[in-house]
Length: 413
Image 1 (cartoon, rainbow, N blue to C red):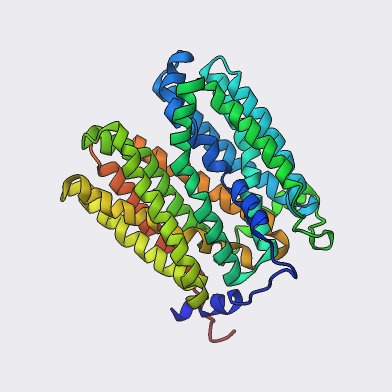
Image 2 (tube, rainbow, N blue to C red):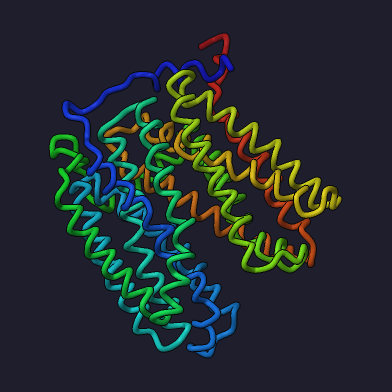
């Protein structure tokens, strides 16, 4: 624990803006952070109908999710430096316009390939809202307070994965699948209007004057920072495990354990509830122990529950609930890892918070592509591939924390 003392000492300074933002400001930030979920969760129940309407296989429709993740992870790397130079609202507003165009394109698509292309455009716009809303929190708060505010926003945001499939199912039944994407057009326009009712959080004197090309090259410089790599690794491995959970549990629960499809949402929702409760707990714990210590505890828990899930998936011990319990606990560690790893990553780069937040998001969602891909690549008709990937990711979370330990000084230094 002593190896983390330096980071804790730096992270404990709380600096708020003269006027703390009110509930409306935080509600807008929560909406911005929720664009990753709302863009996908709403249309999940419509995928079988879309497959028939577009004369495409289920696998081709699944690429609408993969394509979205590719656009979402890569696009953040562009929006971060733009926001650091020109301000948060301009970058987010531009992204929202792109999101609206992409959503309309999805609604008008006549083939699966066209839909995939517009989903990438949609993701390139949506990722600005998610990445830069985190940077806005960093503009307003530092250290422990930043971690607490991120936990609050993530808790509110977690409602969307619970409500999204339910709302989407009703829309597709009453109005058809295209109505879901037209609704996203409306959501994008409403959010764009709400964005310009809140103040800019990055004043001109704090902006990065570098050219965009030079700022993009600075990503290589950031990746040389040992502590930043530690925070990126902790969050990245966790996201890889979580997307493996998202990709693997439908088959494991429904096909292998014969859970009725209508009950799958209940089991999946348990993980979302666990994440919400852990974020509420994190807000309290961080104030007492600091974000680095709670992050360490979260990664230890992720490793332990990940290995537990791997063992159960391989042995079959306890059947369905023997696997549900450790996966629920692994998912819950999201509440102890994500907000704290983001806070730690941005703590040492206040004038480049947009770029660091974007890099963090790119690593997280890029890792998600790898985690979900490995589950599919190693699929053998049993829960073992899911358990193996989750176990590997849990171990990776904890190993990443080694990068936060100070480098021992040589005797001749």
